Amino acid sequence: MSFLELLEIEFMKVKRSKIVPLIFIAPLLVVASGIANLSRYFTPEYTNAWPAMFIQSALVYAYYLLPFSMIVVCVMIAGRETGNNGILKMLALPVSRYSLSIAKFCVLAFYLLMEMAVFLVVFVVAGTVATRTMGVTETLPVLYLVKWCAGLFLTMLPCVGTMWAITVLFEKPLLSVGLNLLLVIPGVLVANTPLWIAYPYCYSGYLVSCSLHDFSVESNRIAFSWFPFLPVAVLVFVLVFAVAVIKFGKKEMR
Image 1 (cartoon, rainbow, N blue to C red):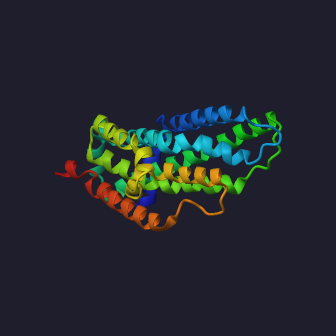
Image 2: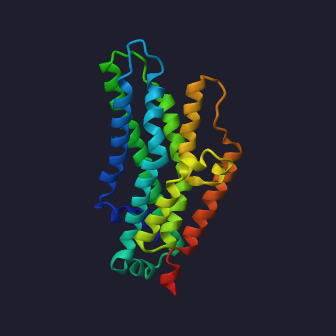
Image 3: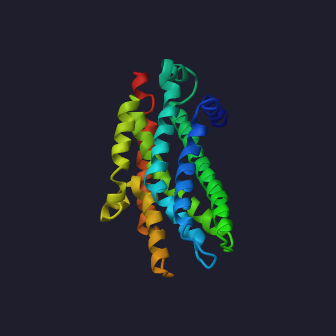
């Protein structure tokens, strides 16, 4: 069985799950509340309305709502195998458990990408309504929004990789969800310390915090530096991904 066939099977498994409706909840909540609160201060002369709305919406989303939704997605994907001993049936097939774990993570990454796309679309629609209602004539900054959404996606990958590794290590959903939640909650605190660079749960939130700093001081200098962040983030991702791949199904193979 090729990897593409295995990937197709994994997508078929979650096709009828409630993951798709789930990934709409967080973007709708955060965008609707964020833009509604900020748009009250708009005037026709207001400038930088789109960056202000994006930061207002993305700050809580990146620190909490996006990680929370990904925790649930991890458990739902893993639950397709743990229920009714499905993992034993899959491991009985002529397929590597390493390939199976990688395929499942690819599905998880796809839903992360889908949620970012939903966030972008919902934000553009809500922002357009807000600016037109308040008479703001500022042009929609498409490249700005796509750039920051892409940044959120990339910085979330180490976090999602860590969540998936924890989900694999702790087969009981309550344990994996509880541990992941405990690691997400202090993210905003860790982001204000030098330890943030080794704490993947705050990467996306830190990125938005840096954009808030740039917006507030109106400086041409970008607060977020990709070095040494990028090498550390790649190392963290590789380590947790390796743990997830190696440990997946190992207990059932004994």
